[in-house]
Amino acid sequence: MKGHIDTDFDRGHIWHPYTSMRDPLPVYPVARASGVTIELEDGRKLVDGMSSWWAAVHGYNHPVLNHAVTRQLDSMSHVMFGGLTHEPAVKLAGQLIELTPEPLQKVFFSDSGSVSVEVAIKMALQYWQAAGLSRKRRLLTVRSGYHGDTFGAMSVCDPDTGMHSLFTGMLAEQLFAEAPQCGFDAAWNENGIEDLHQKLRQHHEAVAAVIIEPVVQGAGGMRFYSPHYLIRLRELCDEYGVLLIFDEIATGFGRTGKMFALEHAGVVPDIMCVGKALTGGYMTLAATLAADHVADTISSAEPGLFMHGPTFMANPLACSVASASIDLLCSRDWEQEVQDIQGALQDGLSPCSRFSGVHDVRVLGAIGVVELCQPVDMAAVQNFFVERGAWVRPFGRLIYLMPPFIISPSEMVILTRAVRDAVRLIAS
Picture 1 (spheres, rainbow, N blue to C red):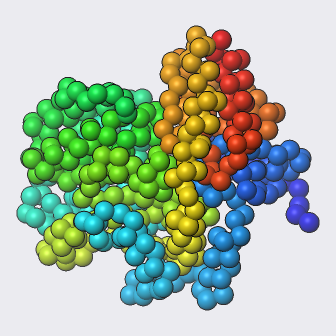
Picture 2: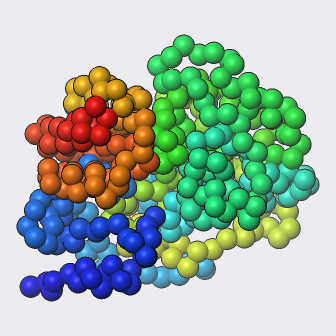
Picture 3: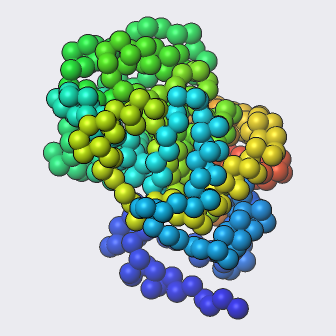
């Protein structure tokens, strides 16, 4: 039998994400998780509306993914990737190349989404050095974006409203254009990209790449924008000689209703980052995919190699479960599952729009967002959801749902009803 979780020790010594050690937010001890259910140590069961920060698309304790891990343990749990290779990495790279558009033919593995962004940035910078244009060393991005918590990634997150404004002056100074304003289904207006166009026109000789989250801006505000923005962005990057990086860490593997969000626009970046749902939420793993011309250019000049190499790069356990997760996703009618979730989110969350304290309600694929006019009291609202059998973790003014794809209609009702009740209490 497992021992009791010492929450006093946790409170005194373990630093949880985005919280204070002086007055930490409450944490809820988890005993086990299975399917879409998180079971607390006291026996309460919560329907997971977060997919463990958008990663556990198949839910928890899935027998297929469990088997992939245990089978891999029988041969090796880890081996360095410098000078060695192994079947799980080769198979996973092949699957990623098959799933993504053809120009993305090179795969660089890393150990987290944020590091995959660091890798993408370094690829872009080294690309221009190799091409003899070392003055191209800045990044251009849009406001309301989020790309991770490491230093390069922080530098391209929103500098004012994002989570990293504290580090202003310590980060590389990048260029920021206005966030896309044209809604996902709205008619395209060229004015929506004029600010970015103007910055490219003015600074392209110094810009190495544009980095952006395609169609959905995640932790920077859960905003959805027109796919046509990406079509024009690709054209502008080509016109001004700038690489294009897509951060698909949150949107990849079906979350928006397409396998990758770039498919809404039918355009291809030069570099693409994936993570989160890559392993079905089992282990930390990410990948940066690059077009042939990126890899060829970097490899053609001194030092003739890409200067990055994480210790746990292409970890065999993580690659094994990622490969199994992709096979599992492709074996199911995941598109119908996401479509069903989208319908349930629209039906369940749309009543929130009638409350005066609600700024917006929006749904795309398996993402549902209620944006309030004021930030929530995190501790209070978290307890509210737990009391109603739901695991929902808002941030700022946003209460949102990103459930596992295997969720049932009745479990969706529990989540959306809990959100409506919370919004009614907060915003009416």
